[in-house]
Image 1 (cartoon, rainbow, N blue to C red):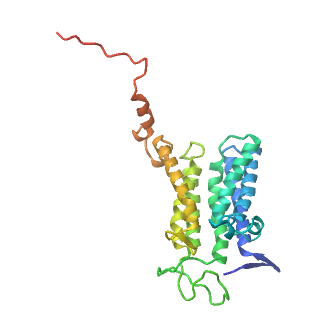
Image 2 (image 1 turned 120 degrees about the vertical axis):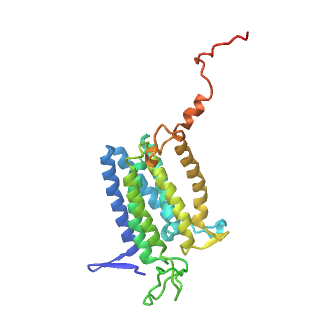
Length: 287
């Protein structure tokens, strides 16, 4: 547990430092990707502003509705000052911020593909701060389990003398792999918005799974609050991915020919009903 970093004679909060560094790197990647796609315009920068503002609000207020009983939840001011700083809340707020910002300026083009690689790299860097300041995870007998240093006087959620899952390292590895995969796939997914859809789907599945190694409290059916938050999203992205697959959005990514039966299923369904101009088959008289 390293709550502060010493930079010269200045003490900087570790978590805030790496979150800020992640935001900076994500912004740089966004600008580079927008420039590569020829989309570096005033409208896209407004979308970034919406993401930053919405993400900050979502992250700080994510603990406001933590309990079903409203009396157990903090006030808005308390949530803002001492909230849980949830990554999921930040991502949800950022997504809403982008939609609101684009609506305000009347910008209708999809920007998700510009954000996907940027978010993956920014998350990887930001999670370093979580790893250095938060309880790592649940007990494990795996050889890479980590222990809380004996020199740390207090580690909320840490288990004295027991090895714990390095859950934040799992996420850092996932986000770095996702960043590389998105850079590879961006030339193979040409339909706007689909790269972002794939990233969201992959992260939702990963985050649901990695929660089983996290030190978060379980609330019902041995699932954590983040898992219950993710479940509706998993259903939605599964429907969305099925739609994209049936319509051939991922053919090049999967190495399939655009003329394959799966990618043309919608054409087959349309051709199942004869059109009005289809010539009738010649009648044969029975002798």
